[in-house]
Amino acid sequence: MELGFWWIVSSTALIGGFVAVCWLLKSVNEWYYVSKLGGKGNTLPPGDMGWPLIGNMWSFLFAFKWGDPDSFVSSFVSRFGRTGIYRAYMFGNPTIIVTMPETCRRVLMDDERFKQGWPKSTCDLMGKKSFLGISDEEHKRLRRLTAAPINGHKALSVYHEHIRDIVVNSLDKWTKEERPIEFLTEIKKITFKIIMYIFLGSEIDPMMKTLEKEYAILNNGLRAMAINLPGFAYHEALKARRTLVNILQDVVDERRARKGSDISETRKSMMDLLMEVEDENGRKLDDEEIIDIILMYLNAGHESSAHATMWATLLLHQHPECLQKARAEQVEIVRRRSSSDEGLSFKEIKQMEYLSKGHKSKAGTFIPFGTGSRICPGSDLTKLEISTFLHYFLLNYELELLNPGSGVRYLPHSSPIDNCLANIKKLISPSSSTQSTK
Image (tube, rainbow, N blue to C red; front, side, top):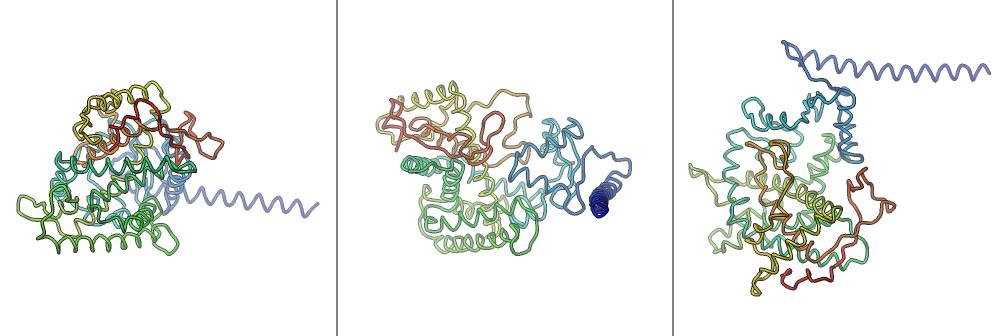
Protein backbone atom coordinates (compact mmCIF):
# COMPACT_ATOMS: atom_id res chain seq x y z
CA MET A 1 0.00 0.00 0.00
CA GLU A 2 2.78 2.39 1.00
CA LEU A 3 4.80 1.48 -2.11
CA GLY A 4 1.82 2.23 -4.32
CA PHE A 5 1.31 5.58 -2.63
CA TRP A 6 4.91 6.68 -3.22
CA TRP A 7 4.75 5.47 -6.82
CA ILE A 8 1.73 7.71 -7.45
CA VAL A 9 3.48 10.64 -5.76
CA SER A 10 6.66 10.11 -7.81
CA SER A 11 4.75 9.78 -11.09
CA THR A 12 2.74 12.91 -10.37
CA ALA A 13 5.91 14.81 -9.49
CA LEU A 14 7.64 13.70 -12.70
CA ILE A 15 4.68 14.63 -14.88
CA GLY A 16 4.28 17.95 -13.09
CA GLY A 17 8.00 18.64 -13.42
CA PHE A 18 7.94 17.83 -17.13
CA VAL A 19 4.96 20.11 -17.72
CA ALA A 20 6.65 22.88 -15.74
CA VAL A 21 9.89 22.57 -17.74
CA CYS A 22 7.94 22.64 -21.03
CA TRP A 23 6.02 25.71 -19.90
CA LEU A 24 9.25 27.41 -18.79
CA LEU A 25 11.04 26.70 -22.08
CA LYS A 26 8.18 28.05 -24.16
CA SER A 27 7.77 31.08 -21.91
CA VAL A 28 11.48 31.95 -22.06
CA ASN A 29 11.49 31.51 -25.85
CA GLU A 30 8.42 33.73 -26.17
CA TRP A 31 9.88 36.40 -23.86
CA TYR A 32 13.23 36.44 -25.68
CA TYR A 33 11.81 37.07 -29.16
CA VAL A 34 8.95 39.34 -28.12
CA SER A 35 11.29 41.59 -26.12
CA LYS A 36 13.90 41.55 -28.89
CA LEU A 37 11.54 42.21 -31.81
CA GLY A 38 8.88 44.25 -30.07
CA GLY A 39 11.19 46.94 -28.71
CA LYS A 40 11.47 50.57 -29.85
CA GLY A 41 7.73 51.08 -29.73
CA ASN A 42 6.90 48.20 -32.09
CA THR A 43 3.90 46.07 -31.24
CA LEU A 44 3.92 42.47 -32.38
CA PRO A 45 0.70 40.75 -33.46
CA PRO A 46 -0.70 37.95 -31.28
CA GLY A 47 0.73 34.49 -31.74
CA ASP A 48 3.01 31.79 -30.44
CA MET A 49 6.78 31.54 -30.99
CA GLY A 50 6.77 27.82 -30.22
CA TRP A 51 9.75 25.93 -28.82
CA PRO A 52 13.39 27.06 -28.65
CA LEU A 53 15.18 26.40 -31.99
CA ILE A 54 12.25 24.35 -33.36
CA GLY A 55 9.59 27.04 -33.14
CA ASN A 56 6.27 25.98 -34.68
CA MET A 57 7.79 23.63 -37.26
CA TRP A 58 6.57 20.37 -35.73
CA SER A 59 2.92 21.38 -35.89
CA PHE A 60 3.43 22.97 -39.34
CA LEU A 61 5.05 19.88 -40.85
CA PHE A 62 2.52 17.53 -39.26
CA ALA A 63 -0.40 19.56 -40.63
CA PHE A 64 1.02 19.71 -44.15
CA LYS A 65 2.35 16.16 -44.40
CA TRP A 66 -0.09 14.03 -42.45
CA GLY A 67 -3.02 16.15 -41.39
CA ASP A 68 -5.26 18.90 -42.70
CA PRO A 69 -3.14 21.85 -43.98
CA ASP A 70 -5.83 24.35 -42.90
CA SER A 71 -5.50 23.17 -39.30
CA PHE A 72 -2.16 24.97 -38.83
CA VAL A 73 -3.58 28.45 -39.41
CA SER A 74 -6.91 27.46 -37.83
CA SER A 75 -5.10 26.78 -34.55
CA PHE A 76 -3.87 30.40 -34.50
CA VAL A 77 -7.36 31.69 -35.31
CA SER A 78 -8.99 29.63 -32.54
CA ARG A 79 -6.43 30.71 -29.93
CA PHE A 80 -5.85 34.35 -30.86
CA GLY A 81 -8.97 35.39 -32.75
CA ARG A 82 -9.59 36.27 -36.39
CA THR A 83 -7.03 39.09 -36.50
CA GLY A 84 -5.61 38.05 -39.88
CA ILE A 85 -1.99 38.50 -38.72
CA TYR A 86 0.01 36.35 -36.26
CA ARG A 87 3.54 35.90 -35.01
CA ALA A 88 5.31 32.55 -35.18
CA TYR A 89 8.77 30.99 -35.54
CA MET A 90 9.21 29.15 -38.85
CA PHE A 91 12.17 27.72 -40.77
CA GLY A 92 14.68 29.00 -38.23
CA ASN A 93 13.42 32.61 -38.21
CA PRO A 94 10.83 34.77 -36.43
CA THR A 95 7.86 34.95 -38.81
CA ILE A 96 4.71 36.98 -39.35
CA ILE A 97 1.81 35.04 -40.91
CA VAL A 98 -0.81 37.08 -42.80
CA THR A 99 -4.14 35.55 -43.82
CA MET A 100 -6.41 38.46 -44.81
CA PRO A 101 -6.64 39.24 -48.56
CA GLU A 102 -5.99 42.96 -48.10
CA THR A 103 -2.84 42.31 -46.05
CA CYS A 104 -1.58 39.64 -48.45
CA ARG A 105 -2.06 42.00 -51.37
CA ARG A 106 -0.15 44.77 -49.60
CA VAL A 107 2.78 42.43 -48.88
CA LEU A 108 2.90 41.30 -52.51
CA MET A 109 2.54 44.80 -53.98
CA ASP A 110 4.75 46.90 -51.66
CA ASP A 111 8.29 46.01 -52.72
CA GLU A 112 9.79 48.90 -50.76
CA ARG A 113 8.62 47.78 -47.33
CA PHE A 114 8.42 44.03 -47.91
CA LYS A 115 11.60 42.59 -49.36
CA GLN A 116 11.69 39.12 -50.86
CA GLY A 117 13.18 36.58 -48.48
CA TRP A 118 13.35 32.81 -48.20
CA PRO A 119 14.79 30.43 -45.60
CA LYS A 120 18.47 29.68 -46.28
CA SER A 121 17.66 25.97 -46.51
CA THR A 122 15.21 26.62 -49.37
CA CYS A 123 17.71 28.83 -51.21
CA ASP A 124 20.39 26.15 -50.88
CA LEU A 125 18.08 23.58 -52.48
CA MET A 126 16.76 25.85 -55.24
CA GLY A 127 20.11 27.51 -55.96
CA LYS A 128 21.64 30.91 -55.29
CA LYS A 129 20.98 32.04 -58.89
CA SER A 130 17.28 31.17 -58.81
CA PHE A 131 14.67 33.87 -58.14
CA LEU A 132 14.79 32.99 -54.43
CA GLY A 133 18.34 34.04 -53.64
CA ILE A 134 19.05 37.12 -55.76
CA SER A 135 18.74 40.89 -55.40
CA ASP A 136 15.67 42.83 -56.52
CA GLU A 137 17.49 44.11 -59.60
CA GLU A 138 18.63 40.63 -60.61
CA HIS A 139 15.12 39.35 -59.96
CA LYS A 140 13.65 41.90 -62.37
CA ARG A 141 16.35 41.15 -64.95
CA LEU A 142 15.76 37.39 -64.88
CA ARG A 143 11.98 37.83 -65.08
CA ARG A 144 12.40 40.01 -68.18
CA LEU A 145 14.73 37.49 -69.81
CA THR A 146 12.59 34.44 -69.06
CA ALA A 147 9.18 35.99 -69.82
CA ALA A 148 9.14 35.21 -73.57
CA PRO A 149 10.56 31.64 -73.35
CA ILE A 150 7.94 30.76 -70.73
CA ASN A 151 4.79 32.77 -71.35
CA GLY A 152 5.24 34.23 -74.82
CA HIS A 153 2.54 33.45 -77.39
CA LYS A 154 5.06 31.91 -79.79
CA ALA A 155 6.52 29.65 -77.11
CA LEU A 156 3.12 28.56 -75.77
CA SER A 157 1.90 27.59 -79.23
CA VAL A 158 4.92 25.26 -79.52
CA TYR A 159 4.53 23.85 -76.00
CA HIS A 160 0.86 23.15 -76.69
CA GLU A 161 1.74 20.34 -79.09
CA HIS A 162 3.90 18.62 -76.43
CA ILE A 163 1.18 19.02 -73.81
CA ARG A 164 -1.53 17.67 -76.13
CA ASP A 165 0.45 14.56 -77.10
CA ILE A 166 1.45 13.73 -73.52
CA VAL A 167 -2.10 14.18 -72.18
CA VAL A 168 -3.72 12.06 -74.92
CA ASN A 169 -1.23 9.21 -74.52
CA SER A 170 -1.37 9.27 -70.70
CA LEU A 171 -5.18 9.22 -70.55
CA ASP A 172 -5.31 6.31 -72.97
CA LYS A 173 -2.81 4.43 -70.79
CA TRP A 174 -4.90 5.03 -67.66
CA THR A 175 -7.94 3.28 -69.10
CA LYS A 176 -5.87 0.16 -69.70
CA GLU A 177 -4.83 -0.15 -66.06
CA GLU A 178 -6.32 -3.22 -64.39
CA ARG A 179 -6.13 -1.69 -60.92
CA PRO A 180 -7.32 1.72 -59.66
CA ILE A 181 -4.78 4.51 -60.12
CA GLU A 182 -3.55 7.03 -57.57
CA PHE A 183 -5.07 10.05 -59.27
CA LEU A 184 -2.71 12.77 -58.02
CA THR A 185 0.38 10.60 -58.55
CA GLU A 186 -0.56 9.96 -62.16
CA ILE A 187 -1.34 13.62 -62.84
CA LYS A 188 2.05 14.53 -61.36
CA LYS A 189 3.67 12.17 -63.86
CA ILE A 190 1.90 14.01 -66.66
CA THR A 191 2.89 17.49 -65.47
CA PHE A 192 6.48 16.36 -64.80
CA LYS A 193 6.80 14.91 -68.28
CA ILE A 194 5.30 18.05 -69.80
CA ILE A 195 7.61 20.39 -67.93
CA MET A 196 10.71 18.31 -68.73
CA TYR A 197 9.81 18.17 -72.44
CA ILE A 198 9.28 21.92 -72.45
CA PHE A 199 12.54 22.62 -70.62
CA LEU A 200 14.82 20.02 -72.18
CA GLY A 201 13.08 18.51 -75.20
CA SER A 202 12.18 14.93 -76.10
CA GLU A 203 15.85 13.91 -76.06
CA ILE A 204 15.60 13.74 -72.27
CA ASP A 205 13.37 10.63 -72.46
CA PRO A 206 16.07 8.09 -71.41
CA MET A 207 16.74 10.09 -68.23
CA MET A 208 13.08 10.78 -67.35
CA LYS A 209 12.78 8.21 -64.54
CA THR A 210 16.06 9.31 -62.93
CA LEU A 211 15.05 12.97 -63.10
CA GLU A 212 11.63 12.22 -61.64
CA LYS A 213 13.11 10.19 -58.78
CA GLU A 214 15.75 12.78 -57.86
CA TYR A 215 13.28 15.64 -58.13
CA ALA A 216 10.86 13.87 -55.76
CA ILE A 217 13.67 13.61 -53.18
CA LEU A 218 14.55 17.29 -53.67
CA ASN A 219 10.92 18.35 -53.33
CA ASN A 220 10.51 16.33 -50.14
CA GLY A 221 13.44 18.20 -48.58
CA LEU A 222 11.81 21.57 -49.24
CA ARG A 223 9.12 20.67 -46.71
CA ALA A 224 11.41 19.21 -44.07
CA MET A 225 13.45 20.43 -41.12
CA ALA A 226 16.84 21.71 -42.32
CA ILE A 227 18.90 18.97 -40.65
CA ASN A 228 21.92 18.18 -42.80
CA LEU A 229 22.70 14.74 -41.39
CA PRO A 230 22.53 11.33 -43.11
CA GLY A 231 19.05 9.84 -42.97
CA PHE A 232 17.21 13.17 -42.82
CA ALA A 233 15.10 14.39 -45.76
CA TYR A 234 16.99 17.69 -46.10
CA HIS A 235 20.36 15.90 -46.35
CA GLU A 236 19.01 13.58 -49.04
CA ALA A 237 17.53 16.57 -50.88
CA LEU A 238 20.93 18.28 -51.05
CA LYS A 239 22.39 15.11 -52.60
CA ALA A 240 19.50 14.98 -55.08
CA ARG A 241 20.16 18.60 -56.06
CA ARG A 242 23.81 17.79 -56.81
CA THR A 243 22.70 14.88 -59.01
CA LEU A 244 20.18 17.05 -60.87
CA VAL A 245 22.73 19.84 -61.36
CA ASN A 246 25.23 17.36 -62.84
CA ILE A 247 22.60 15.99 -65.26
CA LEU A 248 21.50 19.47 -66.34
CA GLN A 249 25.12 20.65 -66.71
CA ASP A 250 25.76 17.75 -69.11
CA VAL A 251 22.70 18.83 -71.12
CA VAL A 252 23.89 22.47 -71.20
CA ASP A 253 27.37 21.38 -72.35
CA GLU A 254 25.87 19.21 -75.10
CA ARG A 255 23.59 22.04 -76.29
CA ARG A 256 26.46 24.53 -76.36
CA ALA A 257 28.58 22.07 -78.33
CA ARG A 258 25.95 21.81 -81.07
CA LYS A 259 25.20 25.52 -81.05
CA GLY A 260 26.19 25.95 -84.67
CA SER A 261 23.83 23.28 -85.93
CA ASP A 262 20.45 24.20 -87.37
CA ILE A 263 17.56 23.60 -84.96
CA SER A 264 14.08 24.55 -86.10
CA GLU A 265 12.13 26.95 -83.91
CA THR A 266 9.50 24.29 -83.22
CA ARG A 267 12.12 21.86 -81.89
CA LYS A 268 13.79 24.30 -79.53
CA SER A 269 13.35 23.60 -75.82
CA MET A 270 13.21 26.26 -73.14
CA MET A 271 16.86 25.56 -72.34
CA ASP A 272 17.77 26.43 -75.95
CA LEU A 273 15.78 29.66 -75.68
CA LEU A 274 17.31 30.57 -72.31
CA MET A 275 20.78 30.10 -73.80
CA GLU A 276 19.92 32.59 -76.56
CA VAL A 277 18.21 35.44 -74.67
CA GLU A 278 20.22 38.51 -73.70
CA ASP A 279 19.46 41.70 -71.81
CA GLU A 280 19.68 45.28 -73.07
CA ASN A 281 23.44 45.26 -72.44
CA GLY A 282 23.99 42.11 -74.49
CA ARG A 283 24.60 39.97 -71.40
CA LYS A 284 23.44 36.35 -71.60
CA LEU A 285 22.57 33.90 -68.86
CA ASP A 286 25.45 31.79 -67.57
CA ASP A 287 25.22 28.02 -66.96
CA GLU A 288 24.49 28.35 -63.25
CA GLU A 289 21.65 30.79 -63.88
CA ILE A 290 20.10 28.53 -66.52
CA ILE A 291 20.28 25.43 -64.30
CA ASP A 292 18.90 27.18 -61.20
CA ILE A 293 16.09 28.78 -63.21
CA ILE A 294 15.09 25.40 -64.64
CA LEU A 295 15.10 23.76 -61.19
CA MET A 296 13.04 26.63 -59.79
CA TYR A 297 10.46 26.49 -62.60
CA LEU A 298 10.36 22.72 -62.32
CA ASN A 299 9.36 23.09 -58.67
CA ALA A 300 6.85 25.87 -59.34
CA GLY A 301 5.32 24.46 -62.50
CA HIS A 302 5.08 20.77 -61.67
CA GLU A 303 3.53 20.46 -58.20
CA SER A 304 1.09 23.36 -58.43
CA SER A 305 -0.16 22.41 -61.91
CA ALA A 306 -0.78 18.81 -60.82
CA HIS A 307 -2.76 19.81 -57.73
CA ALA A 308 -4.79 22.42 -59.62
CA THR A 309 -5.61 19.89 -62.36
CA MET A 310 -6.66 17.30 -59.79
CA TRP A 311 -8.93 19.70 -57.91
CA ALA A 312 -10.48 21.06 -61.12
CA THR A 313 -11.35 17.51 -62.22
CA LEU A 314 -12.67 16.42 -58.82
CA LEU A 315 -14.76 19.54 -58.23
CA LEU A 316 -16.34 19.33 -61.67
CA HIS A 317 -17.39 15.75 -60.94
CA GLN A 318 -18.78 16.81 -57.56
CA HIS A 319 -20.96 19.45 -59.28
CA PRO A 320 -22.84 17.69 -62.12
CA GLU A 321 -24.45 20.88 -63.45
CA CYS A 322 -21.00 22.48 -63.93
CA LEU A 323 -19.64 19.26 -65.41
CA GLN A 324 -22.50 19.20 -67.94
CA LYS A 325 -21.85 22.79 -69.06
CA ALA A 326 -18.08 22.31 -69.26
CA ARG A 327 -18.48 19.10 -71.28
CA ALA A 328 -21.03 20.72 -73.62
CA GLU A 329 -18.58 23.54 -74.34
CA GLN A 330 -15.88 21.05 -75.32
CA VAL A 331 -18.31 19.13 -77.56
CA GLU A 332 -19.20 22.41 -79.31
CA ILE A 333 -15.51 23.18 -79.88
CA VAL A 334 -15.10 19.78 -81.54
CA ARG A 335 -18.26 20.29 -83.62
CA ARG A 336 -16.88 23.55 -85.08
CA ARG A 337 -13.50 21.98 -85.81
CA SER A 338 -12.45 21.33 -89.40
CA SER A 339 -12.20 17.66 -90.36
CA SER A 340 -8.59 18.27 -91.42
CA ASP A 341 -7.52 19.43 -87.94
CA GLU A 342 -5.64 16.98 -85.74
CA GLY A 343 -7.04 17.50 -82.27
CA LEU A 344 -7.19 20.53 -79.99
CA SER A 345 -5.50 23.63 -81.43
CA PHE A 346 -3.91 26.48 -79.52
CA LYS A 347 -6.55 28.83 -80.95
CA GLU A 348 -9.36 26.66 -79.54
CA ILE A 349 -8.04 27.10 -75.99
CA LYS A 350 -9.19 30.73 -76.20
CA GLN A 351 -12.73 29.55 -76.99
CA MET A 352 -13.15 27.87 -73.60
CA GLU A 353 -15.09 30.72 -72.00
CA TYR A 354 -17.01 28.65 -69.45
CA LEU A 355 -14.04 26.51 -68.47
CA SER A 356 -11.83 29.58 -67.95
CA LYS A 357 -14.22 31.35 -65.50
CA GLY A 358 -13.12 31.60 -61.52
CA HIS A 359 -15.77 32.95 -59.40
CA LYS A 360 -16.43 36.69 -59.26
CA SER A 361 -14.83 37.98 -56.10
CA LYS A 362 -13.66 41.18 -54.50
CA ALA A 363 -10.40 42.48 -55.95
CA GLY A 364 -7.42 40.96 -54.17
CA THR A 365 -9.31 38.07 -52.54
CA PHE A 366 -8.49 35.51 -55.23
CA ILE A 367 -4.84 35.60 -56.30
CA PRO A 368 -3.83 32.02 -57.18
CA PHE A 369 -0.82 33.26 -59.17
CA GLY A 370 0.17 36.04 -56.77
CA THR A 371 0.34 39.67 -57.83
CA GLY A 372 2.75 42.56 -58.23
CA SER A 373 6.40 41.87 -59.05
CA ARG A 374 6.03 38.36 -57.64
CA ILE A 375 3.20 37.23 -59.90
CA CYS A 376 3.82 33.74 -61.25
CA PRO A 377 5.73 34.03 -64.55
CA GLY A 378 4.35 30.68 -65.73
CA SER A 379 0.66 31.40 -65.14
CA ASP A 380 -0.33 31.13 -68.82
CA LEU A 381 1.58 27.87 -69.19
CA THR A 382 -0.25 26.44 -66.16
CA LYS A 383 -3.65 27.45 -67.58
CA LEU A 384 -2.69 25.86 -70.91
CA GLU A 385 -1.83 22.56 -69.20
CA ILE A 386 -5.06 22.46 -67.18
CA SER A 387 -7.26 23.44 -70.14
CA THR A 388 -5.72 20.82 -72.43
CA PHE A 389 -6.10 18.07 -69.83
CA LEU A 390 -9.72 18.98 -69.09
CA HIS A 391 -10.61 19.18 -72.80
CA TYR A 392 -9.67 15.56 -73.45
CA PHE A 393 -10.81 14.28 -70.07
CA LEU A 394 -14.27 15.86 -70.29
CA LEU A 395 -14.83 14.68 -73.85
CA ASN A 396 -13.72 11.09 -73.52
CA TYR A 397 -13.44 9.97 -69.90
CA GLU A 398 -15.23 9.80 -66.58
CA LEU A 399 -13.84 9.61 -63.07
CA GLU A 400 -14.96 7.00 -60.57
CA LEU A 401 -13.60 7.75 -57.09
CA LEU A 402 -13.42 4.82 -54.71
CA ASN A 403 -15.52 5.17 -51.55
CA PRO A 404 -14.05 6.52 -48.27
CA GLY A 405 -13.90 2.98 -46.88
CA SER A 406 -11.00 2.25 -49.22
CA GLY A 407 -8.62 4.26 -47.08
CA VAL A 408 -8.95 7.63 -48.77
CA ARG A 409 -9.16 10.50 -46.27
CA TYR A 410 -11.98 13.00 -46.78
CA LEU A 411 -12.67 16.53 -45.60
CA PRO A 412 -16.12 17.38 -44.15
CA HIS A 413 -17.30 18.43 -47.64
CA SER A 414 -16.33 14.98 -48.96
CA SER A 415 -13.30 15.99 -51.01
CA PRO A 416 -10.06 14.00 -50.80
CA ILE A 417 -7.19 15.99 -49.31
CA ASP A 418 -4.43 13.79 -50.60
CA ASN A 419 -3.91 10.98 -53.10
CA CYS A 420 -7.21 9.35 -53.97
CA LEU A 421 -7.73 6.03 -55.70
CA ALA A 422 -9.79 6.22 -58.87
CA ASN A 423 -10.91 4.26 -61.90
CA ILE A 424 -10.75 6.10 -65.22
CA LYS A 425 -13.33 4.90 -67.73
CA LYS A 426 -13.64 5.79 -71.40
CA LEU A 427 -16.97 7.34 -72.35
CA ILE A 428 -19.06 5.68 -75.04
CA SER A 429 -21.13 8.66 -76.12
CA PRO A 430 -21.54 11.22 -78.91
CA SER A 431 -18.94 13.39 -77.17
CA SER A 432 -16.29 10.78 -77.89
CA SER A 433 -15.76 12.19 -81.35
CA THR A 434 -12.86 10.91 -83.38
CA GLN A 435 -11.90 14.56 -83.86
CA SER A 436 -11.29 15.01 -80.12
CA THR A 437 -8.08 13.00 -80.07
CA LYS A 438 -5.02 13.33 -82.19
